[in-house]
Length: 248
Image (tube, rainbow, N blue to C red; front, side, top):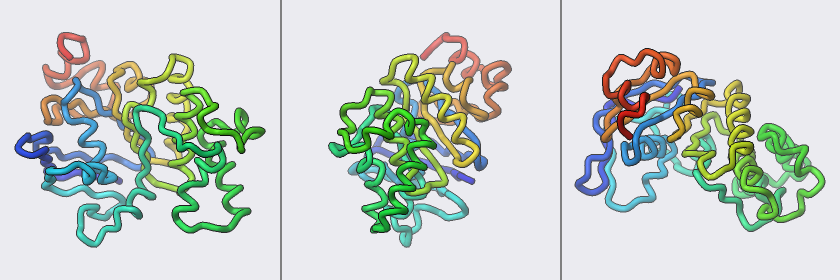
């Protein structure tokens, strides 16, 4: 379970998120849509505290992951980020081999058991639908992979440390249609084991992969409901105008 209660967020004096409350059920795919600059990526990054890395920001309200308020002073952010993985818009493999990219999180967490590491790398690459494509070239550089393969490698890297939540910020926006389709199929298959939250500008993508959709505009959560309802019968006029392309 992920929950936000009365969340406000500020970049300096700019009020970027305005009193947002939301509950996200486990083992679901939830999409955040809305025009550029509406706050959807800022809201996504709250759940693994990536916004902490930005100077002069402030958050009020409560963010809960698996029953824990993740902004308590006692929270170890590194531990939180093991539980809440992140995949970014542009594939960002490390300048290492395919194997070492996936094993990186295990090494950082001082998991030195070689047989476990080998097994976990294979499990993660299989979960990311990449194993069959790379099993014979694990020692090759990750940069030799295509863009779509690199993004699936980044997903495998996030999965290797056994998170419960996977955050994806426009994970297919830099990819070609075939690679995008593979990422969407992957998202759909992963939801049985993970809670997935995806930010996307592609409304068709949101309709294809998600069970629930939140529509953001100017820092506010305008509407949050089943994806079918958002796209076919939204309650708010602003949502209807965005879905039908009247703005955004």
